[in-house]
Length: 422
Image (cartoon, rainbow, N blue to C red; front, side):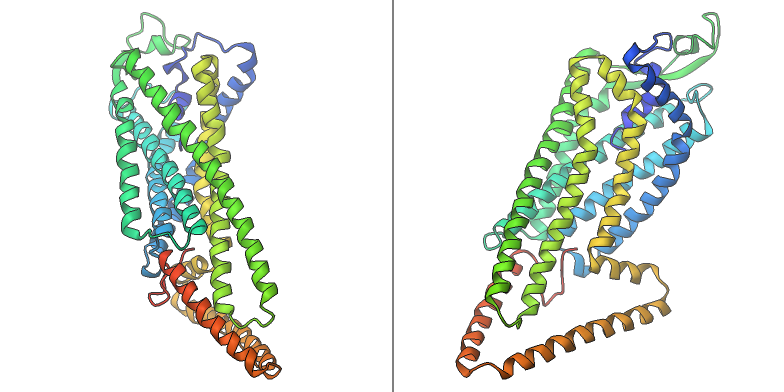
């Protein structure tokens, strides 16, 4: 998905490496593997893109609900939106070029489908780069919310400005890439000398550099620095900072639990636990994104030093695409497994109406049982408390609730509006 241009190269590797040129010995195994895998890549990735499209739509619909409209969820919603754009484009691309027309997809085609392949390459790379930078923005925003809750004044409007800034900057950086390639008609013998002789009149529409090597080099450097190296470094840095914040928050929670012998303030502790769980989920998503993007970035950088690594990059293009596509619905699985609010909203969205009543009744019974146990324990503890303890506890309760409300208000969690992060 993030490697859309390399996908096009993998489908037709002769764009950069003619068929007459055999790979060097260290790459011969990868060359054969890439050739064999390309025959089944479409049948593997096509159903995955359909599943990813469905999960992205479900994610967008759920996060668009009024009680989910927080800064964190707003960024997650736009990440799912740009993942959806890439998945739709890749779904069409993989079906036509990998399933309907394989292994020589450009032979006998009109100009439209090679032009679509070029469009898919540009749109896919742009949308994926935006999603990657929005993931960086998500980490940065979440870190400042967690580390400085009293100073954080981010709201949905400010985050929307940041999102649009990312979109505009990425589109601007992609302009050289938009200008480089064009579709031209060429003799088929140039690209398939083992099939067509030099005297053959068969032609194919192929990709050609329309601006020269200088702009191509500029585009390559921009992609290497701003679309590969820098976002991965930001993700790694803020992932470590978030992990440190989670560790500190867990220690704070343990101290609060030890000081509070009577668990009277389950609401505040529950909100604290949910915020911690949300941050943990975002760290998992970020770490998985780093695992997907780091190998691509390393190969991309290595190809600038040694040209043979670009051959390796192109041969592994399908595998890199597969890992990026899988990341979209693995993120959805993380939402479902780690966020009860997301699961409940998904049940409402997917299950029939009569299932809602059954599920909600069971859920309310569970909540009532938990509430009854808490109240029973609280009443038992209240009987053993003195009047002075009640006064101190009441004063502490007022201060704690005031501070908690102020912190969560700054974090764009409003109890009156019922908004919450995943």
